[in-house]
Length: 209
Length: 209
DNA sequence: TAGATTGTTAATCGATTAACAATC
DNA sequence: TAGATTGTTAATCGATTAACAATC
Image (cartoon, rainbow over the protein chains, first blue to last red):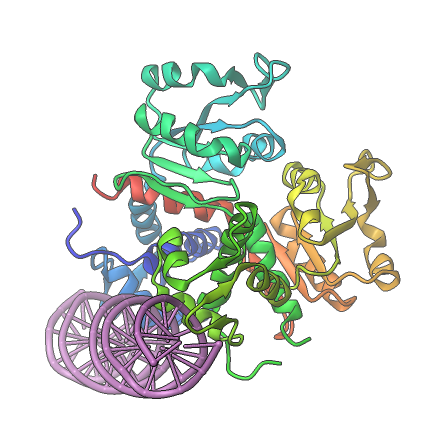
């Protein structure tokens, strides 16, 4: 499928396009030019056309883009057109919040299990999903088709749990631990470093002091 | 303070430097060269020196950087050396999880109140912090020194609540709603679009299909 | 056909890396 | 002093924007 390498900058814009196209569909707008979409998104039309052409010619000269089709194509590129199983490792505040988050299932992510070490939590259900013992993680991954694990556990344990998950077939890690993971080249890590994010905000409020 | 414009790319790396320097301190390492730090962080020494020199010459030729001093300087640049009051607007799953998150107070962020519209929640406490009615938000902001608001409410209401907060002195928004905010030029928005982040991860697992 | 807008090439801009003189 | 490593300038690389021929 891949010909030239797609830059990270482009990839990170795709979900935003997807979001704006969804909004257009909600407003029953079926056709849009790069120029008008650019105005709505506050970027250049040139960037939109360059970005989309990384994946193919989705538009039509003289007409623009068909919103339904473009939305669908980007959904396909992002892999949200199908169901993907995910697990959460770490049933703390954040893990629980993510388990209860409604938005993920809408985008095809199917939470099948939550893992923790706390015996008070093991055996209970969060948002209808069972909490299992971390001891059974390897076994569980062998028996189920899980490519994505959400890491919401204390940072001291994150690397070794990640290693375990990877050794049992997980290829994508959504890492909420406040540290960087080392993984093989064929595993992708998406970091959500909340403290880093908050510090960036703080910087902007304090830069003129 | 500011002379030349600091690029966003540099700013987003600062919390990561801060994190690695903290780690060095924990290991009782008091001195480090850009070369060695670069190896640990998997970036180039050149980039480290360029980044740091945006803010001043923190190093010493022939020696390297004093870890304690550099850590402190970056903390100062990020504004985490002092206490900053923050509020959470929206006491749902995510709002509650953030309220319970221990890490923020460690970096000087002091949660003073949580706002919601749910009468069952108003008057209760989350992690020792009172939940107040959203109706009292404007009044509260007038009476307290709050520069940062965390937005964890349904996206349909986020823009108007943001407008209200801004009109009462809030200058930084940590936006967890799945939408983009429009704000005046002197207000900074840091977005945490979790769905976008998860879709980026999904892309990488599906790109070779 | 004429008008509009894409796909794509070329130009510009900014960020990263390399090189090295300054200096501790 | 000699060795090491910074601060900073120059070179390279990549990403964004502009321009325009292709074409619906």
